[in-house]
Image (cartoon, rainbow, N blue to C red; front, side):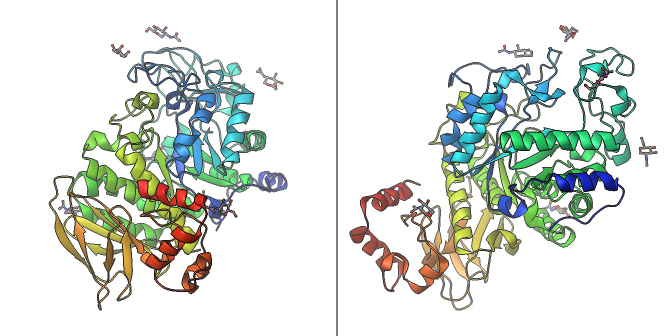
Length: 552
Ligand SMILES: *[C@@H]1O[C@H](CO)[C@@H](O)[C@H](O)[C@H]1NC(C)=O
Ligand SMILES: *[C@@H]1O[C@H](CO)[C@@H](O)[C@H](O)[C@H]1NC(C)=O
Ligand SMILES: *[C@@H]1O[C@H](CO)[C@@H](O)[C@H](O)[C@H]1NC(C)=O
Ligand SMILES: *[C@@H]1O[C@H](CO)[C@@H](O)[C@H](O)[C@H]1NC(C)=O
Ligand SMILES: *[C@@H]1O[C@H](CO)[C@@H](O)[C@H](O)[C@H]1NC(C)=O
Ligand SMILES: *[C@@H]1O[C@H](CO)[C@@H](O)[C@H](O)[C@H]1NC(C)=O
């Protein structure tokens, strides 16, 4: 599973890091089964639980979100079916205000061994970690290893940075000589020069250097151990030395996904092959935008095939449609049906889904900083259309894994491409999830869509949003009802029990149990009989979960 070794690193560093490798860490296999909710601590939840406290997104100042606030909103996150949380960087950042704001986002570190006190105390962060783990969820930490930050406020960064202000990199020798990136597509330039500007330069760590590498590794091990962190996102991974990235990934022994903001299939797959086991799937992200906000479905269909052919393992990438760096979907087009299709695609496509706070409330901000609205102003509405949709999508994704051990490891394949539809199947033949996505938007009219072979002839499938059942004909075709540009998601009816969807119970099931009809001690027969026998024989607890299932 590990990417192949790239040999331009110091052997001693590797030997050292193997010795301290954590033994309890969650690796890529564990993370593939998870679904991640990304928070920006300052904008997610306040300690006072306020839903009215103002936050001027344009001004870019701290708005008061805390780790304690996050703890109080874990029900909100878990209510959508997420079983992992990624929090924004935790370390101490530079204090002070410039024309475009403060370090509320966490990407301006000055002391990686202290915490950002705006977000709370060490105990608060420990409590957050405990609270996340006590729910069986994973904690991911967003991690800045490319740079430190300094406010020069316009004076020349080449001569006005006080390096002794940084911990532990308190000397200019730990950094590349000052230069500003002039060509973001030239990786050498982008890795040796600074991502910052003349107001807040971001001194660029000399990550090729053995000492810098071991200091960052020691620090990361310390954080992971202290706060029981299960996985890391590496911010600006494109801008650090690839050799460092490779060593860092190997040394941590737990899942790591690195931000390489590039739409080139070749670049992204090279990173996965040589440097880091996972990166966000930017090529598919851009193609997804083409498909759903620019009417070009075939770009997406092609990109999916291209990625599958070029990457070592597309199922280990991160699937996303919004994050704190890109425009929100609703800023391109606020049609709700498009938003639903995009979420269905993001969560049911290959890789670890990561949904950025606020997508569930259909927030509209365009690029940074407008995509960082205070979530509390939405009132944490658990009745919102997309909140409930995400809950169903995470539920079927989880259930598919119960029924099919290999679900997450099998890349999606397109079974149909229409002028406005794309149908994808994922999972083991016979147990697969079929998603039919549309870019018609909510103005789309009702029509019948004839899907070519996607299930064996005579298979009854349940559509999880409408709960309608369809049976494939002799050719395995399904004639399905499309309407208002809504996405459709199908699963074989005989394996719906245990899903908690469409009135099927949420009880524990196994594939073997469902196949033999022995689940719940019923001898045989179709699903309807199993369900009605449940209703008469099962205790109250299950009846309650049945009716919760119906709410969806
Ligand atoms: C928000 O901040 C911007 C930039 O500082 C400022 O121009 C604008 O007036 C502020 N808006 C409100 C409502 O205070
Ligand atoms: C930066 O300069 C602006 C005026 O240009 C000033 O308002 C601000 O306080 C300065 N910030 C710091 C941290 O010196
Ligand atoms: C940098 O930090 C180290 C370790 O704390 C210390 O020994 C050294 O004196 C510091 N150097 C400078 C230039 O402050
Ligand atoms: C890329 O950047 C490096 C370092 O800044 C520079 O030496 C090199 O000439 C650049 N390559 C191209 C093709 O521009
Ligand atoms: C869709 O994008 C592809 C390139 O990815 C292009 O070749 C094709 O012409 C586009 N189709 C439409 C309808 O714009
Ligand atoms: C399913 O099994 C797990 C582990 O045995 C248990 O914790 C959980 O409560 C069960 N869920 C239901 C709905 O029975």
